[in-house]
Length: 494
Image (cartoon, rainbow, N blue to C red):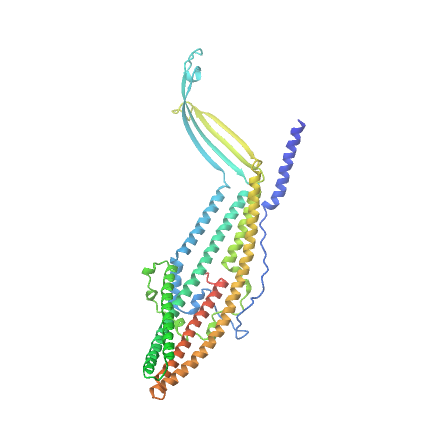
């Protein structure tokens, strides 16, 4: 008797200690992971005046003032299948919230059954209508039963509520993941658009180079046949033709593949997509496609000066990583609750009758109520494994959160330094092109007036076209840097 009392007391004390110790971890809100970030970026864009500020549209592609580009971005947001899938994932995540919330309510079941029974060797007045008790004949009777049962699990350890909170955190993760896909999509569409336009200009330039170089080759061939020059100059001209021809073919191929990629971003088949017809009904300004449409100072106005580093905390991938930490924190609390006993209330109430025609009037009521206690004893090893795994997953989520923040700074700093270096190079290319254009115009006039030979004139034309070609491609690099800066800052979400 004393041993039983000791066991009961020990069990009660264990429950009390479990409630006190478990309550601290199971009912508390997970602590937010703090990551100390640098106050400023390693590289920054400074305005020319201390009081100067630029109005940068958060829908950053509109800063380029190209209405055709705006149409393409809008079409991509509506029709891109990867983004549509991400939106569906949000809705799927919400179903898990309602599923988890359903566990907070009791379950109710209604049952009805009718059975035909045979009792051999026994007869009573209940079934026979007053037959003699000595009769040993079999008794056949019908038994109709109807019942209502209910059960409710007491959320003593806050496990069910933590499951709901985890599901809500996963909804937030899905939302941020959709935003990541959206920002990447917009950046890819804008970059593909600029690349196609740049390739158009580059292809035209290379065709002009090819024509000029071929003409020089023809003139050299004539001079070689006349014995005025050696064969080396002819071979050099022929090699230059092949180099230009290779670049031209590569540019045409790249344009075609980029158009196919853009069609994919827009959710269209490449066979049905025509870039020249995309946004045809829009009067596009096409300011971005002109060779000298933006000077260095104009490009700098596309970048917000003195960017605060805190802006990176609003990047969707950073927020997604943070919500992942929260989700795994709740999962850890759920797994911890597995070590504690579960309590559930159950109740049954019903009727039983041998006659279906008078079931309502001639019935006997049956009922029971109880409290069920299920203690996790034999599955202790399984619960330990689940709990250890939840801790490791939480630690992984924290590391991933820190890694995502560091990567955000790395991407932003790399985009900023690349922009500054390429902008300086662009300035040099502009000067080189202006100087080459000046010389070309001089020798073109001299050729027309007969002062200079055609080969000399064509040589300076090639120099001018080569400088123009470098400027075209450098313009694209600067635009891509600006796109990368916007993307690294997480701009583009409405």
